[in-house]
Amino acid sequence: MPSRPPRLRSALLAVVVGGAVWGSGSGSADAAEDSWKVPAKASITVRGHGYGHGHGMSQHGAEGAARQGRTAAQILKFYYPGTTAGRRGGRVSVLISADTTDDLVVRARKGLRVRDLGTGRTTRLPGRIGGRTPALWRVKQNHRDRTRVSWRTASGGSGAWTKLRDLRGHGELSAGNAPVTLVTPSGDRAYRGRLRALPPSRGSAARDTVNKVRLDDYLRGVVPLEIPASWSQAAVRAQAVAARSYAVFERRSPRAAHYQLCDTTSCQVYGGVRAEHPGSDAAVAATAKQVRLADGQPAFTQFSSSSGGWTAAGSRPYLAARADPYDDWAGNPHHDWSVTLGDARIESAFPRVGDLRSIKVLQRDGNGQWGGRVRSVRLSGTGGQVTVSGDALRFGLGLRSPWVTFRVREG
Image 1 (cartoon, rainbow, N blue to C red):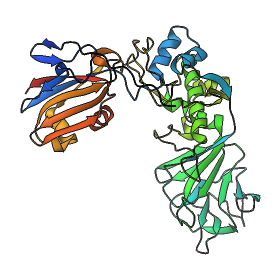
Image 2 (cartoon, rainbow, N blue to C red):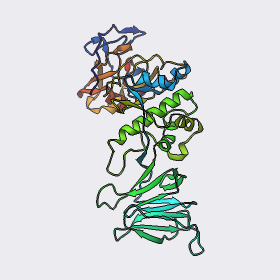
Image 3 (cartoon, rainbow, N blue to C red):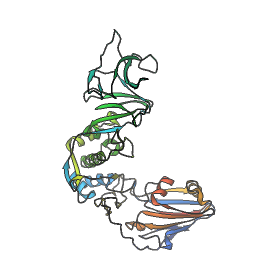
Image 4 (cartoon, helix red, strand yellow):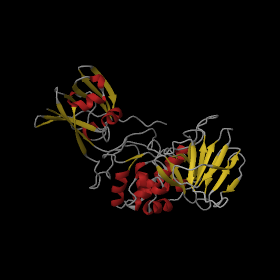
């Protein structure tokens, strides 16, 4: 069920300081005061609050709450109101984006095994073959449309591959749950669980590398990349539960037929073994299998770096817009921020405008200073008018969030 649209609030007067005009107070786009004229050559200072989309948990807010003595459970209840505690486990399958080759190559290690996904047969890979010691193992489709398992002694980029056997189905490499080192064009990366070479579509000669891994081992490679592992344990535990809930929610609607999650910011950043940290490992272990539920199902527990003092309404009732008293603490550099741009920067990002002549905010979400986050803004210039969303403005100009106002100076 979509969340209710926030109420827009009336605008307050702009403040004129030293020849520069700042938008202030709360306001909707109908207010003339939420507009700025831009001279032919201008310096535009963007003042803002928060970092990210603002839906759900503020990570800096979680740390601020922890510093005020709030527990992980209290933090989660605040940022996901109406959700309840639940438990989920199992495995997830994650696309490894760094491996852009059409084969799966790993470094030899004790206990390495290959599994034929067509027959289910598992074979332990030998440490010595004919007096030679394999350094690398490869799973790759061969010319007969079979999956070939081969090896070589050279650990670098030279040396011939020697066939061990062909598989009837696709191939999977693992060493129990011990880390297996994947060789990618950008360097070695170690992963727990199983590494699979799978086609992106039926009949394709290409192969994607997919890591099938226990849910909490996946989280060990996620949590420290999403929040500092050295922060208060209550905040890191809240992040662990939010990340676990998010993964289980996404698992129900896989990204593709051969994997459920990606390893980038489009899902959650996942770095495998090299990302693991004792602080976040402890938080994952302390919250093992804990998730947030909505109507008995995993909740869509979005999170972002900083709310700026107000969370933003999202696509679920529990992703509600509400004042966030925890986000503003001394260690949060994103609660209040500013950046100065030349008008040419905006003209480059939105070239149809031509020579920029004015900026007018058309609509805000009604929550917080200046009327809250920008929903839409009109840029006018010699080339015409361009109306963009607050998020398009944010990404086009590289801003931290769409909760902004402007100051325009000549020169």
